[in-house]
Image 1 (cartoon, rainbow, N blue to C red):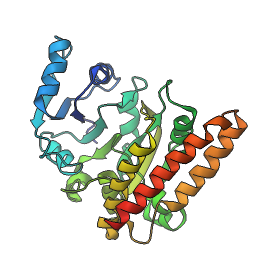
Image 2 (image 1 turned 90 degrees about the horizontal axis):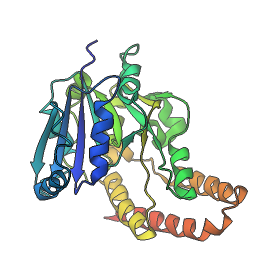
Image 3 (image 1 turned 30 degrees about the vertical axis):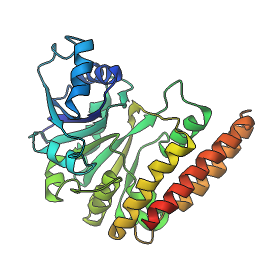
Amino acid sequence: MEKTADVVILTYKPSPLFLDIIDRLEGQTQRPDRIIVMNTGQEHMDRLLSEHPDRLDRYDNIDIHHISKDGFDHGGTRKSAAGYSDAAFLIYMTQDALPADDHLIEQLTAPFDTDDSVAVSYARQLPYETASPIEKYNRSFNYPDGDRKKTKDDIPTLGIKAFFCSDVCACYRRDIYDRLGGHIERTVFNEDMIYARGALDAGYSIYYASKAKVYHSHDYTPAQQYRRNVDLGRSQAEHPEVFGGITSYGEGKKLVKGCTAHLIKNGYWYLIPAFIAQCAGRYLGYRKGRKV
């Protein structure tokens, strides 16, 4: 099938890292046909580009579209970006996901070559070198080595992991995307998993492409974990057709046990109180969100 691929990047107050991401995308073995930037708040982007003149001028395939903060939505903004593309594949990324090598697009689109059932593939997220031992374990827990194809038949055994997918870096087959209606119009979080669950229910599959790699990690404070998980819990509560009867508690327990053992084994026992505080923020935020 046609292998044209457009990359969509959502930005808000972008840092110079965004420009580095553009450079790495332009140097891919499979160069993106278009890079579509959906930017919230034009003044921030204008400031970045004025401080780094000519960084984007060298490229001829970048379109920047500005939206207001009130006009942003995790699902709706991504869906509107699709309207600017006619490529066979849509690759959605965030402004802090740095391609780890020059094979990212090649590896993201590879699963579609031999399997017509794949609706979306998503990349492995590696921690930045500066990430804490806790965050490095979190990344390895959610994004292990080794590819995996997931179908609706995996839901009874994998639970929420069956339709786990991340728009930090994910590739959507456009004809299936359009057939399924694209991203949901309004949601505070989890637009990727909502789409993935719909794809599974429609008989398609989700592919974890572990050879497609980006650097992406955050050392969130407990307060930041709380706010993030309020949105996570709320989005799950608002979509019982997707998450009904399936929660994140089981995966959370596995993470707590695994990370605690990892910290002790590797001499980071002194980080356990900080890890417990992060977990408390996650748990309390998730419970709050489920009740909104």
